[in-house]
Image (cartoon, rainbow, N blue to C red):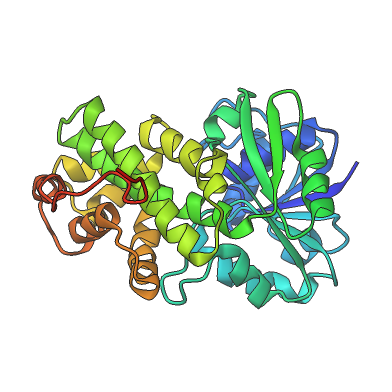
Length: 335
């Protein structure tokens, strides 16, 4: 049994806390909001974000960050990506040398173009930082539906420890050394999922979505490999797997926001309507920053940025993608 704190009580943090508790671990959940802690403690349920998913009495909830960090075998960082840096900074004084932090959020910081694990390492240099990612909507994990993820770490020993802690009969965990590839796949697929949602909102069909998913992973892999990620990662669970589920699922907040934008909502109106952090909006500009830095063309992600931040009509963006210069599907293939 491990002593674990989940830092962040949103839908994903709550679902993972329940999973870890069912695995026999001692689980504490931290939230910055007293109102949220009170609701979780009294109702044993996240009535807003995971309604109907009951939490065991053994699970504890607190707003005390020091209590949540000190003496724990494992810290699961589950705050939305825009709050990764500030939360890490607040955690730093309480983290012990070599303490393991597993980041489960997805994103790239716009101002620095750093991945979330890089941010955590910068803010908490004494910690050992790893990631857990994959096609895993909180709503389904909370209900115990079969799900697979990947634990990424710098050492096989650490990845296998995370695998052991999280894995059970409905939550299968693979291991990988490609932390960068895992994080890029998880962050950039959210931007492509916005495009898939926009296509749905415009009334386009399955052909359009298949094109966006397939060409979207091609963009993500091109950039990710230029940055040092592995092709097999982008062809796996944290690449194409995560992209498929985020583009197609009714649970996807990025797709939901995209649908609203396709129907004519502004980016701000769509985010307000979804009522949860839409990670793809925060990663979209960062993706274009990486595109320029590494000189890799990202046509779908570029059009999403123009729709989000330059008021470009969504149907015009689709037309522009369709009328791009003629080219081979894969220029590496010889005739």
